[in-house]
Structure formats: C-alpha cells, structure tokens
Amino acid sequence: MKKIKVAGLRQVLNLSQIEVLSLPRRLEIMDEALALLAENGINLEFIVAHPHARETMDLVLGVQRNRIAATLGLLQGLKGEFGIEEIRARDEVGMVSLFPHGNRAAVIGHFFSAFQDAGVKPLAITFSLSAISGLTEERFLPDILRALSEYFELPG
Amino acid sequence: MAKIKLHNILQVSDQALFSIHMDSRRAEFLPSILFALSQEEMPITFVVQSIGRDGTSALSLTTAQQNLDWVRAAFQEGLDLQGPTFLNIRQDVVLITIYGPHLGEIPGVASRIFAALVDEGVEVLAHSSSINSSLIVIPQNSLAKAQRALDRICEIPSK
Image (cartoon, rainbow over all chains, first blue to last red; front, side, top):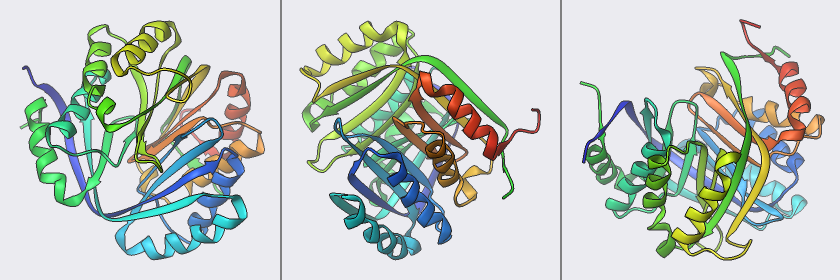
C-alpha cells in the first residue's frame, strides 16, 4: 500500500478529557458552560460538540491534567441547573494530530484504520483546518503512532 | 473588549450533516466506507466522533449535498443502519471555519463565538475546536446572522 505523505504529526500528553453527556440542545447552555470555564482561565485544548440524539448533544472537552479538578467543579455546578444527565472525566489522555496535505477522505479513513489496527477505540476525534486529531489513553499512543506510520509518510 | 484576531473565516455552503450512531462491531467498517468515499472523490469537510453514554460511537460528518444519496447509501448499506436513531441527515447546512494560528492558546475564544451566535439566535448543529481553528456547522438559512455575529467579535487583517 502506498503511504500518504503528510506535513506533520504531533502528540500532546498530560491531558484530561471531560464529557458532558446528553446536554439539552440549547446553545445558551453550551455558551454558559464555556463562558464559565473561560472566566476562570481554563483553556480548552479541544472541544467537540455534536448531536447524540434528536434532542441532546454531547460535549467533549480537553484540558491540561492539572486543571481537571477545577474544570469538573465548575461544570458540576451547572448539572442540576441545566438538566445535564452525566459528566464523565478521564485522566491520562493524549492527543495525536495528523497534518495532511489534501485528500481528506483518504486521510480520515486511514486515520481510523490506524486506530483500529492498534486495537484502540478513539475516545474522540476532532477536526481543524489543518489537522485531524484523535484522543486516546496515553498508554496507547506508541501503538497508534506505530500504526499511523504504516499509512502515512512523514517529511524527513 | 478587543476583537479576536484571525487569519481568515472560510465558509463551505450546500453541505449535508450526517449524524451516525453505531456499536463497536459496526464501527469496524467505518475505515472502508471512508476509503470508498475517497475513491469516489467525495470530500469530507468536517468530522468529529465521541463515545456516548451507552458506549456507542457517535460520528458526525459533513459532505457536499450533491453527494448526499451516495454517502447515505454507503453508510446505510456499509454499516447496516436502519432508521433515524442510527442515521440522521440534516440538509442545507454550512460549515464555517474560523482560523487563527494562535487560537488554541487563548482561553475563551470558543466561548465568545458561542455567545455571539446565541445573541443572533443561530443554532449550532456541530462544533470542533482544536489547534488553530474552530469549525461550526449551522443551518444555511442562519448564515447571514452568523456572519453578523462573527464580524462583531472577530478581526481579519485583510478585511
């Protein structure tokens, strides 16, 4: 199989993932949650928000590991007020980002394949203008990087 | 408050948003479906995934609306999905990409974007922020309102 040339690969360690699940689909709730974190100086490494069912959304956030207690404390305060069903947190999470040149569908397909080959279910996938990123438990990162190298050719 | 300094805001109109829910067994077929889409040169303009309360994977992606029938068939047949519980498609959406190299290092950018969109009454259907950009999927008929909201809080040097 011919490897796809990519512009770069980056990994970020020491993250924690917080999932706000079955959030009522009202934008002002998301606005309030994000504003609360911003007011308290908590920078989010990634945000994913998308439909879970017709009436709810799931919100997945990434923060530096040393900010997880503060982030959770702030979000738990909103739980009752807004009818959020569940807030989950996971520690020791890492993010691997792939910076492709083009042909996004092929890159995305191979990115998912690499996770599968490594026997790892991604905790979340995020997308930016320049990269596709996958969240996983840190201990799986070496396996995923190895699997990605079977599909993608890095410069140099 | 100072405006958020950006490099650009990009829009891709006439998109369809696919929301797919699948168990682990079905998720195994995802790479081959995505590969088939690439072979047919059907671009994916946005993709996010997470794991829901019940442990199932939730995937949202956008593609050009003109490819809707082909992409729907690929997912329905490839993943054996039946009914709106597992596959929901929202037509006439637009993908907005807000791009600035240092966006990821500034707390509160996404919060300000959401607040501005709420003020204009724009519904956000899906969202992803990481590294250097925020991507937002909204109904196409809200585009003018979203542009107004973003113009209010963002500054693009070339504008």
